[in-house]
Length: 213
Ligand SMILES: N[C@@H](CCC(=O)N[C@@H](CS)C(=O)NCC(=O)O)C(=O)O
Image (cartoon, rainbow, N blue to C red; front, side, top):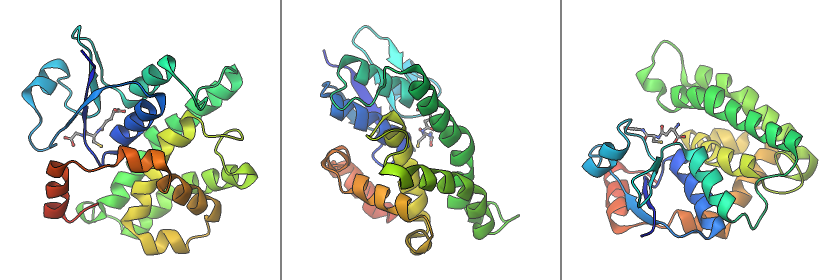
């Protein structure tokens, strides 16, 4: 029996997991969940209630997106997203940690600024900007975040930059982060990304209801 991935189409954590699974060619079944009505079977195997979750036939689970990425790539890593070099591996991990622990909370405040009226949307955006600036400098060298090819870092960070860009597309595309814009557009246009974003009828319906993409 194939492992079962509980996923949500637009969730950046789920997107990064699906990117690694798809590039690895490892076969999993997918269950698109509604975050408002999470399936009982998912909550039974992973009570924390976030997606993605990967459940194996023996009942074991991976419930962190990065663990799912590393699991898939440990089976097959055709584009060499993982690196054998320890220093490169540490640099990849540090950048992802910065994304998940510093940038993501700032992104949430920016995205949901109306719920946090203590500050303006522009203020919250400024708090997130140092990460954008760092990525832009990195990308200015050769178009990749760590070394001259896509690694786990590019793929783990990219869905969050996409989400950031969608908060205010006019601002993002007029910003000074030209290398970041080019990198984001390249990844959005990639066949791999298009593959992982294919819509199921159900999630299409939900997107229309919520007027989202
Ligand atoms: N650390 C987790 C975070 C996953 C996460 O926060 N996912 C969000 C969706 S983007 C979620 O499921 N939130 C639960 C909810 O909204 O009810 C991971 O890396 O997988």
